[in-house]
Length: 355
Image (cartoon, one colour):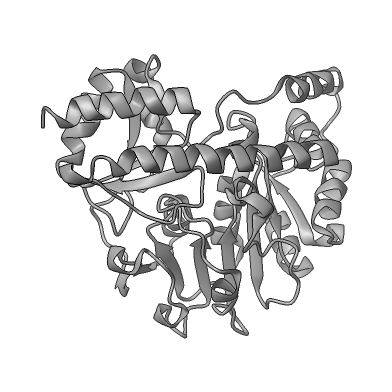
């Protein structure tokens, strides 16, 4: 694990959706970390029912109260956002920060937002040799803003909540991106809802589990004074009426039960994928384990060539070299159902025999 200043060489604005645009639209998608076959019909119908109210300005009070109740918090600790990406921008622009640190490899938008806001960003790079696990002591003591994902995209590592909480300090803002936490059975190691960790800011997304990336809805959980600062940096009516309807529905009892079932299915499908990938160890393929998110990270020789040849046989996967701390030997694979996984493993075996 090492600390380094911001450096070039990584396209922080590259995301998995780039793999399935244009000539990639017909590919089987293992590049985007959005649950397949979503949103479910009941949620689509609920969102469609909100369209009759589009003439009125959005009113987020009911959705905000529903999110607060879901986490056992007062509404003053909740801010609804146009996806977690907006929250990263708000944090970068609204908070006075001297030394921000981002723990990598992880989702690159937090660093991109900080850089766009004029900040110089330091990186703490987790190492493959350590299983990409966090050592809180590696984060500089004078960092006044620390960003970490849990479970982490793209490594699929789930850090112990106690280790993440050890990053908290008086005078420091600790931002924990829990966009994929609802894909973890029981949401173990979650910090959402905690009020005993100083400076804690938790971000959640409703786009991954529910297939709402096009609707843009997420939220921030933080101390009331932090929420107030972020809210002042938002434009008026930042979350649309359909997105508010989705937020309220996705934190209700029915949705939480369905998400819990989906998390268990994802865990089983991930185990099937990882088991199949292990069969290619003799080809130099290594899986980062234990994987806990709805995706896995793999390392293999000539990964860039493998990715291109997979496209030629109908499969899109996420390149890893755009993540600080990784290089061209890494690929991220979204977890899909067994039928899709079996087809992918067959295609991967075909490709590996040719490289």
